[in-house]
Amino acid sequence: MPLAGNGMLLTSMNIDVSDEADFNRWYDREHLEERVAIDGFLEARRYVAHAANLKYLCLYSTATLEVLDSPAYKARLANPTDWSRQTMARFKDMLRVVARITISKGTGRGAALGLVRLRPPPDNAASWRDALQDRLTPDKRDGIISMHLLESEPELSGATAEIPAARNEGARDWFVLIDGTHVGAVSAVIAERFTGPAAAPFPLPISVGTYCLTWDLAKSDIARS
Image (tube, rainbow, N blue to C red; front, side, top):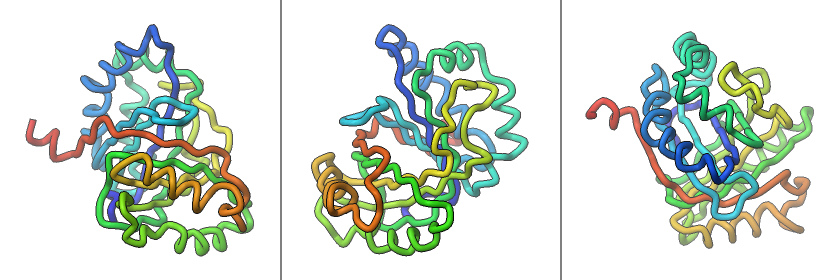
């Protein structure tokens, strides 16, 4: 499948303008490499919003969901660097979701990303997943590379020792990812398949957003450095 592994950590947040320079420096010079170096982490992809409520988004792919509850990961959470501690204390509107990748279709990933947040009823997950199988098919559409479904694991999502302010609202939510070559194509698919009358039989999404890729860091990149 286009996404590496079967687990995913999704983090998203805002940051005050006065703190953005140091925040971006921390992500680029320390945090992504530190995370991807953990056993079982495969890749990290960092985004900035094109049109979304939360400005910054990061996706961390892991070999399995269990990596995100592993001793190696927990040890890193329990021992943040000083720079991490100071930076994470400045996060605003923080969202942290641990999820299982249950659908991933297509032939690669793109530089533009659509994010659709859904809230399925607990007793209807299987039928939702079946219905989304068709909706998450790229269909050789121009500008669309791949489409994916993340199903949150509520017991692992939410706050950590590093980021106690992280929200756990909607911890059972699902997140649709739409990878494309440009934002226009991604926005069109969101409109056609997930908003307005096109959303039926699903309720309208909790939120939708579009993002642009700023950095893709794989485990092999660290091994070569």
